[in-house]
Amino acid sequence: MALALDGVSVEVTGATLVRELSLTVESGEVLGLVGPNGSGKSTALRCVYRALRPTTGAVLLDGTDLTALSLRDSARSVAAVAQDNHTELDFTVAEVVALGRFPHHQGGGALSEHDRLLCQEAMRRTDITHLADRGVLSLSGGERQRVLIARALAQQPRVLVLDEPTNHLDVRHQLELLSFVRHCGLTALVALHDLNLAAATCDRLAVLCGGTLVAIGPPADVLTPELVQRVFGVRPTVVTHPHTGVPQLLYTLTGENNP
Image 1 (tube, rainbow, N blue to C red):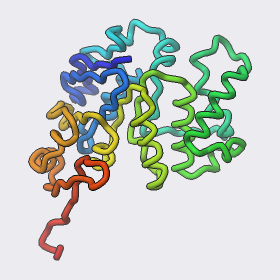
Image 2: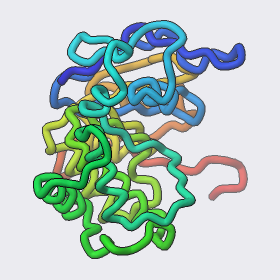
Image 3: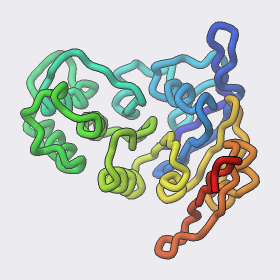
């Protein structure tokens, strides 16, 4: 399933957070959104999973405007893990993951055997099977993040939207999650702060700055020292990873108090 943002702009209380953003994520492609804080990444993603409606422009799934679909129908195609997820209810991990099946049910019927198997597989993929009976409020931030990702996978989406999905995750789980995203075959739009993880995971990168798209293309074409300095305010040394061949950025602290 292809995803497109067609001239999307978002204005909130007189401020333009995203300005005429147009990009396409081809079916099965992983597109990374990168940019400094406040560049519009999360705002753009919120338009895709319908937490926010664009002021102008449209989000399209295989050419169909999302607003033409019911929320249930769009949730059958698009699953999201937002950057901030808070809950005061101490559901068990298994109960939270099972919520991913809600868009596929009419009413509040019990899960079928098929549903339960999908939830178990989602928990296995995210390494949380052993936490199934734990309350989510008792979990660490990283464990809770993996529960939310499992819930999204249980939804069986065709488009996966992830906003800083590696927040709170240790190195092993970061790499396992992004390897899954890379190879799962889903269309994925992922916002990442870590440019090295983005380069290793994404087919293409879209760089946002001030709510505007400033560059898009393969990581090797986008992550140049000149662009990184212009957008992020640091000038890296770009090297090639010896095993994967993807570009990796090395940063040097600068300033009069540094050696």
